[in-house]
Amino acid sequence: MSLSADAKEGTMAQIIEHEPPYTVGYFVGSLAKNSINRRLSTALVKLAPPELQMSEISFSDLPLYSWDYDEDYPQVARDFKASIAEKDAVLFITPEYNRSIPGALKNAIDWASRPYGQNAFSRKPSAVIGASAGAIGTALAQQSLRAVLSFCNSPQLSAPEAYIHMTPDLITDDGEVTNESTEAFLRGYMDEFSAHIQRVLTVVPQQR
Image 1 (spheres, rainbow, N blue to C red):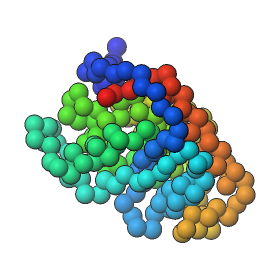
Image 2 (cartoon, helix red, strand yellow):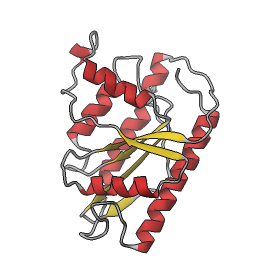
Image 3 (cartoon, rainbow, N blue to C red):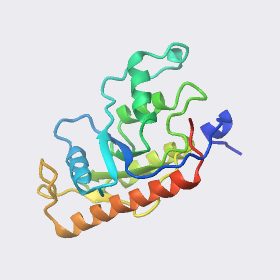
Image 4 (cartoon, one colour):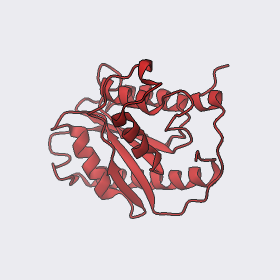
């Protein structure tokens, strides 16, 4: 039997009452300036219900992770982990690279889950979404990411699944969704994420 990272560590936690608004840190998996997933993130921020306070968590300055750093974490990684810890929930907006997630995003997750016993994602509600010009809309990348988040003991929004087939004019640079059905779907997705956050924070012990 395989235990999650947090279960192995035996981290102490307690149920802490949370009331909206909820702070949500979101990760844009692509480092490309003109990423379609960055456009998607802009749209999601606009469509989020008012009880979600959205802010991006950047990871572009992180070096490649090695356990050699565990005894003396660099300040950039400490700040990165602190930015996650202060949020009520996290949202991952990822492209698909070679049927998986981008290396930079995986590197960021590795930093956040270390050193051993200090996993920043444990018990923190999360959701996964992604856009691609291809027909499968990041389905395999999301499957890969969900496996990682499961090991990190992060309770995930399981439905609706959101694989966005991005056509050239679907979302403008300033986050306007030009297709009414897609806009309605994304709005509903963010509403479901809000409900998921509330459920998790109500019943799942949180690290403090």
